[in-house]
Amino acid sequence: MTTALAYDPFNLQHTFPRHPEHSGRLEGTWKLLEADGILDSLLRVESKPAPIDAITAVHMPFYVEQLEAMAAQGGGKVDPDTYVVAASWQAALLAAGGLLSVTDAVLTGETQNGFALVRPPGHHARPHTGMGFCLFGNVAIAARHAQKSHGVKRVLIVDFDVHHGNGTQEMFWDDPSVLVFNTHQFPYYPGSGALDETGAGLGEGYTVNIPLPPGVGDGGYLAAFRQVLAPVARRFQPDLILLSAGYDAHWMDPLANEQLSVAGYGVLVEELMGLADELCGGRLVATLEGGYNLDVLPHCVLTTLRALHRDPAGVSDPFGPAPGSETDISALLAAIKRLHRL
Image (cartoon, rainbow, N blue to C red; front, side, top):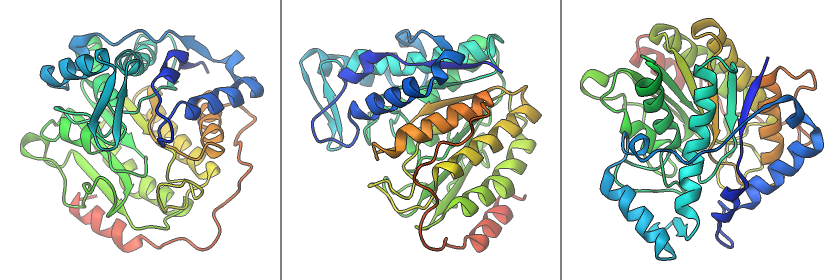
């Protein structure tokens, strides 16, 4: 199997001292990928700047213009958590564009799946503003691009970042052609993603939230995928699966309190591959979101790439399972299944 990978070192120039979302996230990851040798077996695709019309398919033009102007003036902040530097405009275009390049490679049959190793991340970016370290909604841009440029009818977006992908949810809130599935710690930043947030109008039922208490580990996440995501996906019958791959639910991550392991992430990716094989010809595209432990993140990305590429080397997990016991979520999953008639 061929797996596509997009990476552009220019994205390192979008960085801010002592901010959790800084260039070291990619630097350490790329170093491990080079040392491992997996890059030699992947299909490298070019990160081209995303076209403005692809961005304004999900973002309001005035926000796109404001972001470009802010970067041109040397930078600033779009919210208290989200910085802009002079390089941020180009980096944001390349982050979205790198994911578009991987999506194109998959949808033209050049490769079966792929990963966009990009930043700034995207899933908190709202139609009218950036938020939560995110400037453009990369995965939302890719979903619309797949529909407009490749004739894709239905897109399933899966987001296993520990923070709720509120921006992605907002962009497709009333749209039955894009199903958004989120697992996230709750209540937690950004405060959205409650059980009863299920979409509106024609999109009612096409937003599925799994608001998890702290301490949910590999078993709970896998149960959520098997008991909720799998039947939802089979009912929806997607033509493409997009993954917002945030690795901050790892038990060592400093920004949250879940208990996933690197191996647990690998299993979730394999579950998604199985659904993609069953439902949409294996078409699965992942893009980096969160993950802020600089030791853990590289191994999560490497493990994901090995899973996508079906590399026999398997999981790269020097940290092992989380200590202690997992929080039981069986009652929560039962409630979600009732709500969504599964």
